[in-house]
Image 1 (spheres, rainbow, N blue to C red):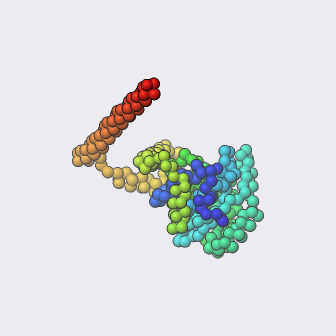
Image 2 (image 1 turned 90 degrees about the vertical axis):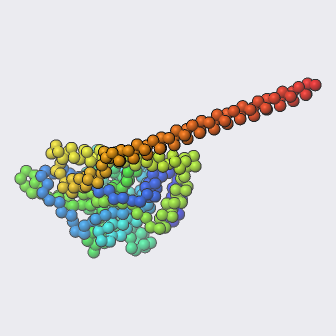
Image 3 (image 1 turned 60 degrees about the vertical axis):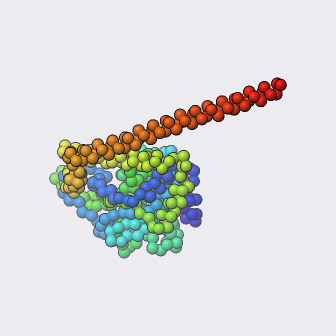
Length: 352
């Protein structure tokens, strides 16, 4: 990209890019998810990762900006999705996605088995990117989803051809959610695993997607660019208190969404719809064990005292604001009366 980062954000996709940038200023937490497959199986026996297991995916801000720009140029206002290639480095099972580029992609909405991905364009762009930075290589591909689709495994096979021959790490698949009303992490990462299942008495091996922990990360130069973008999109009409309250509301909405997701998963496990994953159940039990006991008398008394103090501060603030407003209103009436008297005196003098 030959332009500085602030020049990348124009009015055509500013609204959607803003919330991407807000995610980059917070410090980034992993979001482990239960295993999600792209095809239904019966009686899962074993799930085996392919060679070069992937433990974590780190997404950089330039990838999010490029994906937002790609979506708004190609598929804005439609139900289509866009696909691109992720570039970066892999070290000790951690995939670092530092750059990306768009790839021409079309798929038939009526027939999901029909799609088009421009191989020649992909190869040409990869050759040019190697001339700019030889350290960056293909580490996977992204899609604006927002869900896994049946063609993604076939796209995975195509992208796998462009990996360096000596690398043992398979490509990753990242879904970048460009919906502006999304409050949680906009990226979800997947790896491909071999799943052994029993169907009609026969053991079958098939490829499926499994979640990988994904987090946001940025180098020092990228953090500076993000700060400049935040200055450009800063709204002076919104106060600091209002932005803090808005952040709290967004955080609570995300927490509610995650709790509902956990509840739905546990209900599905109890009903036998899906097999229970021991790791997920253990994580949920750990979360419940870490919750504080709020029913102790000392805790209840402390909460009441804190609430009363906050309510008293709010009451005094409203009272003082009302007194000041009335004071300003009286002063305004006094000034208005003085101006009226001066006008009357001037009219009397002119008549005389």
